Image 1 (cartoon, rainbow, N blue to C red):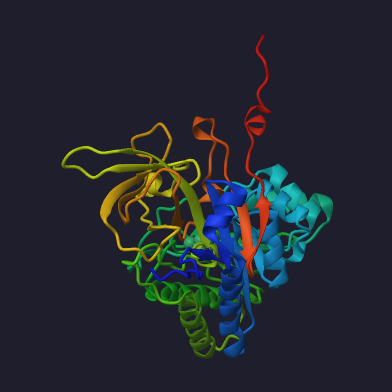
Image 2 (cartoon, helix red, strand yellow):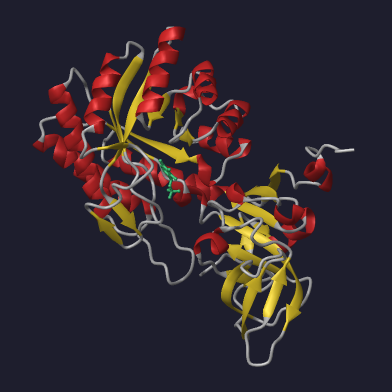
Length: 430
Ligand SMILES: *Cc1c(COP(=O)(O)O)cnc(C)c1O
């Protein structure tokens, strides 16, 4: 990976020296290069603009949700997806414009739906019949209209390099197509006096490298919209193709630029619009990982080391599975550099491990590094998506601080948890 360095040869993030960040804010530390976040959102928006297509970038905020992140998305005029009352509360606290919020989830509670209606969330993406009935009931009782999309299970799934035309019908998300659940859901939504059905949604997977799955799902959704328009008194306004655009975690990953996926989606939708003689709906995309993943770094301080003759040494850092569960959870791969000398040639390959009481707490199984010493700072790259967002207090370790850096200026946007935070919910049993 070619990483920016400063005159001292140190890793630079958003124009700030990684060693200074580690010294100023301690480790483990999550650092975002905000310019990189902005640039990616603008690159997506640019595809829509140059194609003269009405398009919406809705950041899938489960990848990393915080008040500051929502503020940056608002500055960019992006929308956001939320999937829980907690994310919605964060968006409200950020004074994010509620018309630009979409509420997702396969089991939204009644309380969450009431919260969303109270907040006047822009779009509720309805996942199932239980939710459809509940929302019909709530909006009728409140005499409050709400815009909805229906999430369908497209029967197309994608895994990194392949996609499957008939795959993943067996999914917990969305209305099934083959058993006509989706059509029944449209009929039900059209009957509901306060539900304004605007379009369709599907999401085919995550960390996808091939365009074909997105093209296939676009065709599928466009033809469904055309069917619905023919069968019902329904005007297709929104085509939401989800997210899942793949990013590089290591030098073995060679993804297309994320905007290439949007280009392919736009072209497929335009072609269908002509072929189906249907006006082009607004196209919504929901990238999460592609917006925040490459922009995030995790800084750690090296501590202990264990050498076993004939085996790779274990080098331990002051974080691990509590701030990044992805390697332990699904064998996610990352790369790390020595922050003081990212370009220095490696002298050994080590197991880069965490401090948690699990043998599986291995951040990077085989990491080439120069010789390291206790106190050295390592940076794990591309940790911005689903890292902090999935952080836990396992072993009662506090979660790290999160810092945003832009033009060399750093600002704490999520404070480091304290030991007092860790026990503040505990109640005495005596
Ligand atoms: C998780 C998710 C996304 C974002 O996926 P990424 O891989 O982070 O781009 C988008 N839409 C839906 C419905 C999701 O569940």
